[in-house]
Image (cartoon, rainbow, N blue to C red; front, side, top):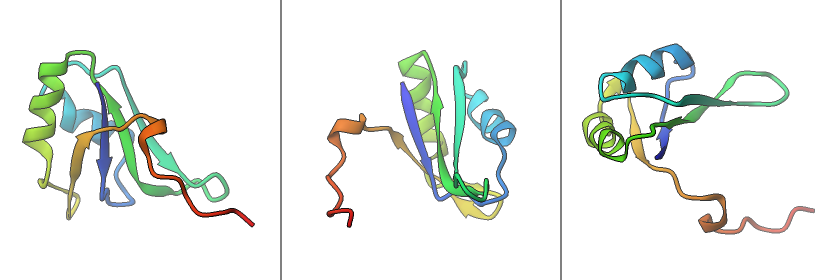
Length: 90
């Protein structure tokens, strides 16, 4: 299951995110989203967990819990096609 993790403190590293989620089970990948020009964190990322029951436990266990001073927003990631369209790009 692909899990969205939002409201991350900008100083959170992939290793710290992996450590938080590994308490709930096996992690396939961790991907922090960064600005392509500055390389700094955009404050969200994704964690892939192969076992859905472990992923559900991680979502329930970590949503609204603090990490480096900010409460995480954790839920199942939506596939790209389900997101609302953005306005026109001029």
